Length: 229
Image (cartoon, rainbow, N blue to C red; front, top):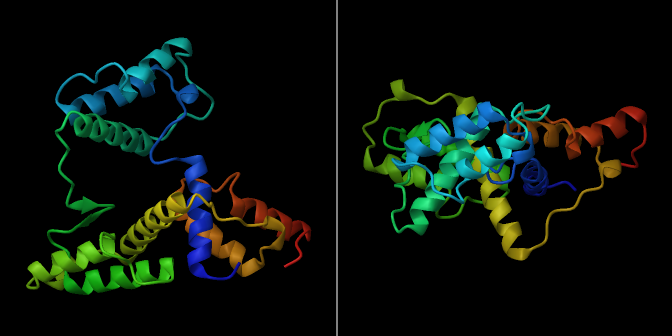
């Protein structure tokens, strides 16, 4: 394993196993989390979430374990899951929720051409090839071209651009892997120090914690001298 694109795909696949598309483990949900999901999804839909919705299922699950599990999902994941499910419900009803112009802290209505170029560079670096049409970088460049007068006083922080680029690269890589039905493979015992650091950096951007991830296992083996890289 050496290409940045491959490491990105490994990190994406590993993150997906931990947090799959905003999904949450209902066994870890307590009454507090269930109420939060219900509130978020109700607000997004404009009506009470119906039977079969994530909010409804979360409340049923929480009734079995009111205190929840030892590691309840963080608020940002609850919100992501609730909004994703609300979008699914509205789409099935024939009322798709309009796509937000704010993606991971980047407002496409105000992004400057300079920031769009930086975003393209970061996503290109993460993927290992030029971001395709439909990518965040491509959409940002198209949006910036519509308002080139945007000044640099609206500059987006480099860390925000980088994180958004990696997340979108993750989405693209995951979708490509999903279509080919061939998840990326990596042997933690064959990861060298530089690759372990790169994986950890990528997984840190995708997850709140790298505990139990491929990068953590690889680093552990490096520390114990159990690698063959």
